[in-house]
Image (spheres, each protein chain N blue to C red):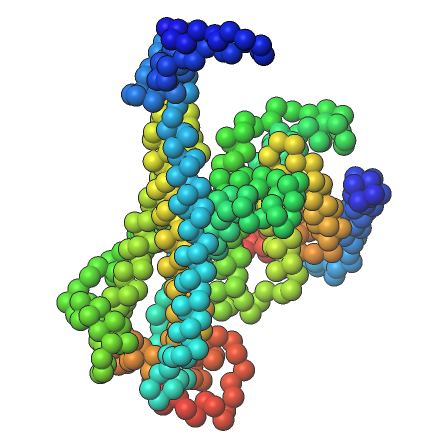
Length: 213
Length: 337
């Protein structure tokens, strides 16, 4: 019964909430009405947007020493998670059979293990910094903590289910993924889709005003 | 040799008596003895190329399995429960170790964000490894009667995967810990006195300590040395494909299990002392600041330099740094910088 619910109705429900929720949130941002910029352009908005999208991958030299931990941990976590999500053999298999009808070459098992270790280590460091740094702690919301914990639980159940023949553990992982998909559109996890448009928007605004930031 | 012919008369024929002690050799005995290597280790030849591939039955495995059941599996729960009971008894009899004059509210900086992140990262990973490791070591004995075979097999499978995955993270955290804290944990003059006085529990009078006292330094080096032994032996066990034979695997397992049990047992004491056992201890690893009275009581040599360099924050300054609302009533306890 639980197996049927998790692999059937709950999966379709969470997929629908995820897709519709993400589209609605992105639409809300795209179609948001802002004040028209009437100022005379001092520079190119497009080049400012492109420059800002890429320049923000590297921290400013002035603050780099203070944020070394979260830069290193941030890259470890995000790159590890990206590799896990799109190149882990079980995920590629699932995408091929359940979602797209085609797949691609997955990474070998050893790379899967290394990627997950990077992701776990990075996420633990990031969450600890959020809790232990007084400024980060003050600006963190409940949403930030739920998102971090939920992501950790999804990753953990996935890795614990690596043993062969543990269908119940895979089911548990599937269930936590569904919870994450339902929570995703209404949380800070939306930054997965918004971080590039956000950088581009800010960069375009700066570029038009000739600000080199 | 027949010695007694059958007697004449009615009844069933009597079977002949054989003299006692005549050995009849089973031709399979010698073969089996050699296979089991009862006399000496025997290596044969095989088409299969690999470590120990010429050994039909490796007796080391049998010995190790018996040793594992008779020693760590049998005695580890007793040791861990005993440590908890001793600490419980100590807490009931002695109570929380307080600070003379209580907490002042005036704080002094002790650990950076990075150092605290590293400490808690190592602690979280260690706890995860300890729990999954104990499940793998003792689960068959303790958990199957409670949960049954199927549920235990799921828990054990998950524990094994999690344990192998988080092991290397523990090693990296440990090495970062070694680099960050080693210099301050080198033994110095006065540490032996601290040890002889049992950290203040034996005899009277104040026991002097630097940034880290003798107990903390010893705990640090125990974590580093046993942690490295556990990590290296764990890597040998996780990667059996690098040519290590059965003997190396068995030795690694013994080192891994015994090292882990010792570290878990002592870590329970560390957790006790760092939380409910000593007043004001946990604050250093939470906010990075400690009460100056706590520093005076436990680390007076380091506290003296803080006094001399005027590094002490008032309660208001500390609350402002932590972003907490300032209570004007309590803030008066701070004597300023």
